[in-house]
Image 1 (tube, rainbow, N blue to C red):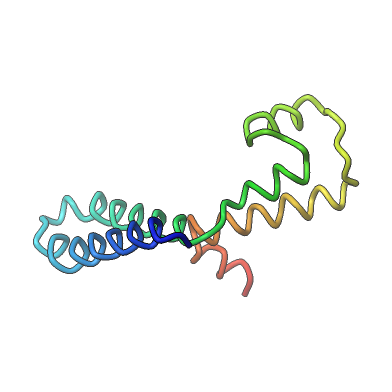
Image 2 (tube, helix red, strand yellow; image 1 turned 90 degrees about the horizontal axis):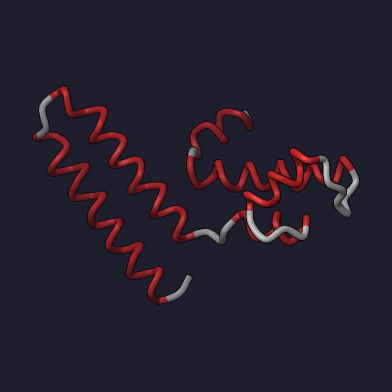
Length: 112
């Protein structure tokens, strides 16, 4: 992690801690869902900063420029250099890496 990313992560940690422990408890009940979503978004941002972009290895494996173009290629049935099993393994690895960032609890439940 770069110094810049480390500083950003520290800021997010402080903001999350302040929000969860000082602001959320003072909010009315009708704001609990929105505040929980905000705290979750901050946690995702923190994890995103601390991890490599899962899409990079996926795009490299399929020789695609971005996820949108890769999705278009799959929808159109374009050929790629991987077997079906290799492609499925690469996609599963990408999905698990994304879930580790965006929804780690779901991923842990699936592995049990």
